[in-house]
Length: 373
Ligand SMILES: Cc1ncc(COP(=O)(O)O)c(C=O)c1O
Image (cartoon, rainbow, N blue to C red; front, side, top):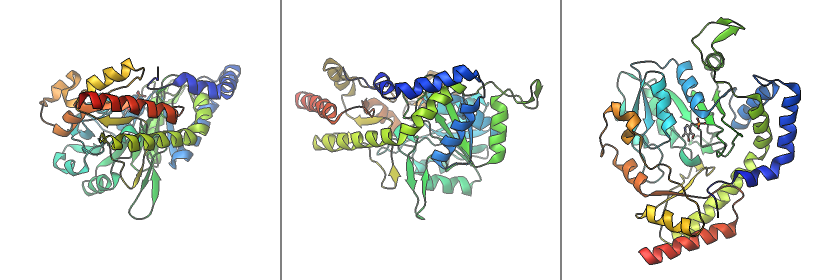
């Protein structure tokens, strides 16, 4: 069986340094806000070319804290893509603000910048685009809109550790260093994944960083002194120690994902199958490799029979999720996201996947297409 993600295989390549790092934390006993956390925050901020980093308990925690730190509150509106993971929008709702959904670009599945401006109202405070599947979204027009309307830009970079954007002025920036704040997830299956939950806020704004740091630790200024209504949303030292080991491998893992993605693109295009466009100014890190096909569910079933696991990111766009029914959107409101969600299928893309495995997966897809038209 070829799994969608193979965490065990990866663990065996880094077993010794991971166990050493875990043991060092166990020996020191600095489990909460320990030395590996500060070191990892500095190293990850350096990797992404951002100034400040605040480790959090999860990507969801990072998003929620970032929004709270930015002062987003009840009656505010935050524009988010409708085609993303639930947490992008639930984090907005957690502040009491309203998530306002925006449709997708059919070629990339990322937020369509052309559709953002019409959604802006006097209540809009921020835009929170997602770098979906590891591909940076088309951020330059979004930055321009944010600037024009004086809105905050918070990147949901949960799926894009190390992705790059080449700007028209010749500058190159990593995702996570572009907006007013950015949020990452270290969920185990992410390109940089912990052995449990984890997340991070990055920012170049000291005020936001200081407030997020306070908020993740009960808003406290002394052991039993609390200046803000904070939370308990810290990244564990143990996870930070593991992530420090894995960060050293991230660039080489990303390169393998990119090479795997290129091979899929080439082979699937030869079959006439729709593959998502990588923007010419964007360097993806291929967190998810997705294709589009009409009879998606039957292909998934066929691949399963052949021993290939697949996934669907995501089968229900957020406006059709029961949890967001209170926002009163209707089926048909976001036609691009709705049609993507019916046809999208994710194939294995993890770094340890071999070219031979990719070729065999595509061979099965070819057989399926030949049989099913
Ligand atoms: C786009 C996006 N945002 C937010 C999250 C939430 O991260 P976590 O699962 O670490 O809470 C995820 C992760 O699954 C994600 O993919």
